[in-house]
Length: 292
Image (cartoon, rainbow, N blue to C red):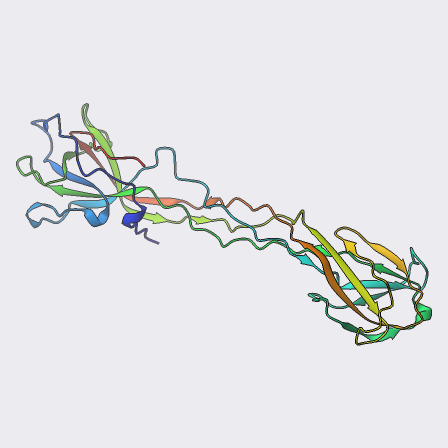
């Protein structure tokens, strides 16, 4: 795509220009006039003449930025465990368990089992720990703006000096300028093929999450079978069950909830800035501007 650089993305420029100290050599090519600044501020060529060239001068002596705006990661929320395992043997239990699964994304509300587990089949329960959800990365940023200024070059002569322009001449066929002149390169087209790598988040860490999963002898979660066994992150707990009630439902709550965090990735700049249709002119004086 073609790059359209607005005035807000251009570097600030001085409106005053250094007065030329070197007159054009007597045997030089016809004099050109060059103006550099924000595109919206560019004055027309004298006498209504069309510009000889227009383009963009890229100011990046050390190269374009290779990173985008910083990525961010949302919090890693505490998530309830959705399963418990019932075993016919006391803790630590045997090799065969009945997995009771409330389903992914369970919000902890009362979840009745399709078929109650009879008391003779339940001697212990293994409680799974809560977990931290993945962090949500921020949106992919835009690449940094190209530090470029608009250039307008007009044909003319030294007797007609348009305000704000400086006198120039075209460079040699090798792109060089004679001693005492300053070389300026600009391009008619800047095609921005750059993009930022999508933001990503590393694994969640930190935080504190403690879940209490209650077991009930009825499908409405009114007759609790256990006294409660809070389980934290990274923990797996086993408790013996002696209730005469069948295991019919379960309900869970987070009794402690402190979200974790993730490390964001660095959004590197991918792709390149294409510079097309170059032009080189040699000015009879330096161009002076402010560098922010």
